[in-house]
Image (cartoon, rainbow, N blue to C red):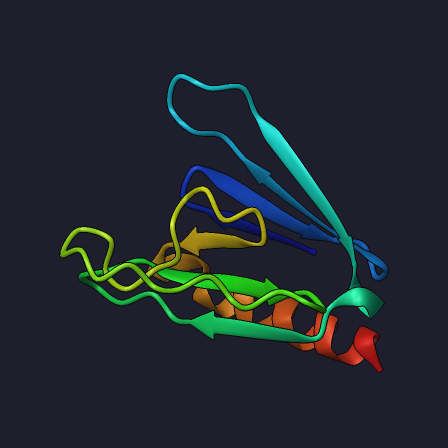
Length: 106
């Protein structure tokens, strides 16, 4: 199951979540998390004006705060390894991915 995000993607194989990010001028980075290790998920759907995001919350860490800057549109910062901005066109796929992760968490 794949979700194409803004400057990255999320892949879920039923057990592992892999978030791949590629910032302009930097090398591609991957972050892997097991679905059973996640304590929560957050999904903000994308709109016509702003991108949304998918975020995974891990034990012992607070969710990254949403940026209040006008161009950020209420998303976590790009530096947060456990979230990814998504365009409006990827919202349906992101909803399915979050539902699959929640089911895998048990």
